[in-house]
Amino acid sequence: MSSVRLSLSLESKSGSENRSVQIDRLVIAGWTGRNKAAMEAHIEELEKLGVARPKSTPIYYRAAAMMLTTADAIEVAGPDSSGEVEFVLFSLADGLWVGVGSDHTDRKLETIGVTWSKQACPHPVAKTLWRMDEIADHWEQIILRSYAIEGGKDVLYQEGPVTAMLPPADLIANCTIAQNKALPVGTAMYCGTLPAKGGIRPAEGFVFELEDPVLKRKISHRYLTKVLPIEG
Image 1 (spheres, one colour):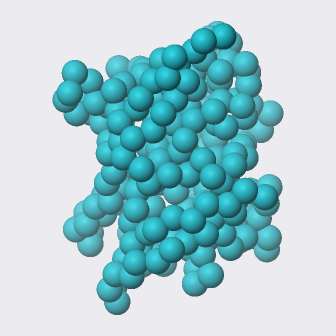
Image 2 (cartoon, helix red, strand yellow):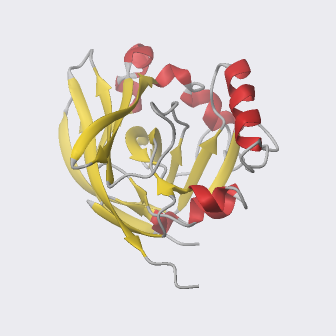
């Protein structure tokens, strides 16, 4: 089993704590939308581009935990990858926490196999987490947002409520590695994304954020993408 240790800031109503967190399992939940008709239309759209229909919805892809990173730059092979904002659940020894990340994916490889495409790129996450039980009562008001860095400018790429995706409890209960409807301690799970404004496309970099308008706080992270040449 691969593991990664991340230096994170855990924020709660009692204060902020810097903690070194070990993650042993990385799960990427796909096709998590609540609107089944819209999701089916998108599946059919991607099928025309060569992306295979998922065998179930939602579906839970696995990737190596070492693919998680809080770095401000990543390296990818070739020009065909792009990011997408997702809320990320972290199962730690003291309970469930939520953060935000980018499910950076190789779109060309995605047409060959989605699981392979998830393993091909680093998966950035922000360094801050919030206690899930402290935002559960206003979860429907939490906002996801992302920007593509294009020509040196931040261009709005995605924006919408986390309620576009299935509730965290449902995503956890249906996860293939869940135990008694809970994620094993040491698990991070990406939980689905929003449509891209202007279509899915590569960019110089990516900015993603999770906003809580009730407690008036925000988690954000920015990273640049360095494209490595494909030599064969």
